[in-house]
Amino acid sequence: MTDRPGPRRELERIREGGGPGAAHAREALGAGPVPERLRAAILALALARGERSSTCPSDAARALADEWRPLLPRARELARELARGGEVRLTQGDRALDPDGEWHGPIRIRPAR
Image 1: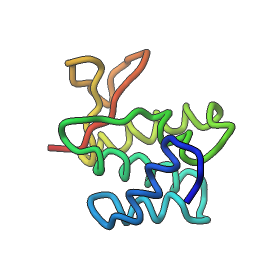
Image 2: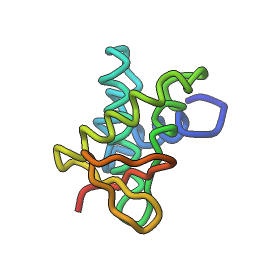
Image 3: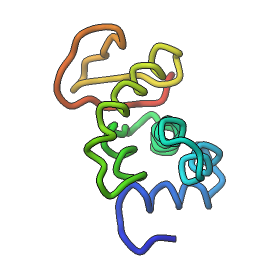
Image 4: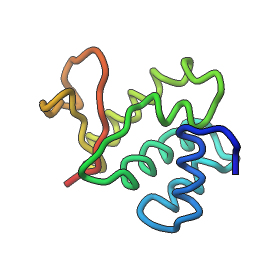
């Protein structure tokens, strides 16, 4: 396990815990293509945090790379794709976001109901 705190450490705990999101955490921490690992990280974090919490696209990006900012646009697009597929919900404050709508600023990712 990594010594540094943050989303990567959280993914490692999710993987080791075997609960919701563990399979996705294993994929995210694996050696596959970055877009697939990023998608898996989003799902692992959202599922493990559960309905009462949420995650951010940057959490998934930071879990995969020290230089995470270049991954952020792809993480946001993957969150849209996951929301279109009904796997997650996107919110901004208390407002649900349409994954096909135009929105700007910080978003949160929650597990689908």
